Length: 232
Image (cartoon, rainbow, N blue to C red; front, side, top):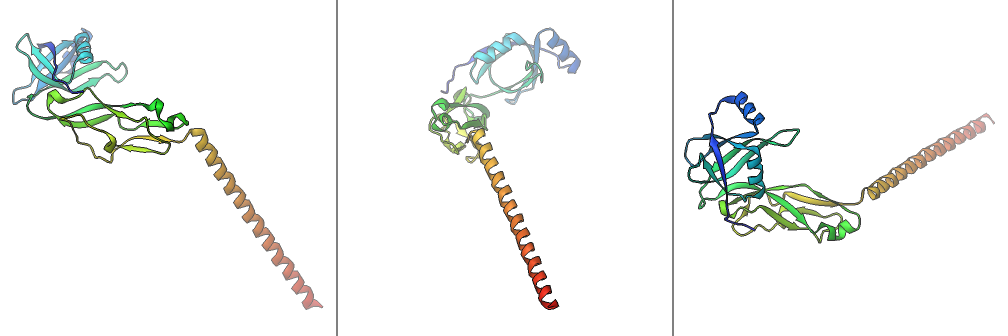
């Protein structure tokens, strides 16, 4: 559900001084970041990793960002860079926004009701192909997540973006034919069918070989008969 609630995050201005300084910040438990957009100059900042983690875990799309205790500015997280091994945030980009101007954003897609789906109960494998949706909305209307009920899917179904209903004020910007999820037959069943097909092919090939041998034998016998008749 969309909401206009915001959470305040206080950060400290920093000097943009390259990767070595950024590493020092991270070793001290801080995350470097940059605030930009809104027709103003970019501002480099730092924030405690613990504070940033807690804020992102409990905030909605819009955050009130306060730099050095100044008045809050509505922002959204534009990009989070995470460590490839630990998964910890090592850099964050914030974008200034106006609450009355729509922006582009990505939202997590959550599939619900899978345990009740006939195709899943019959052993089908539900695979979520698309996990994030590109949307356009006012900052205050950006939902935390978009849900899709898949409780009615059957084995063999392919679910596309057309099945997703966006919340009020939110426009989905991806191709409507984008595949969201599929329900495939149980793997054991697929393997059994493949084995049957392979065995059928082997039998057919064997019968063809036997037929060829029989035909060759008949031709050879006919030749010997003809030769014997001529000698007589």
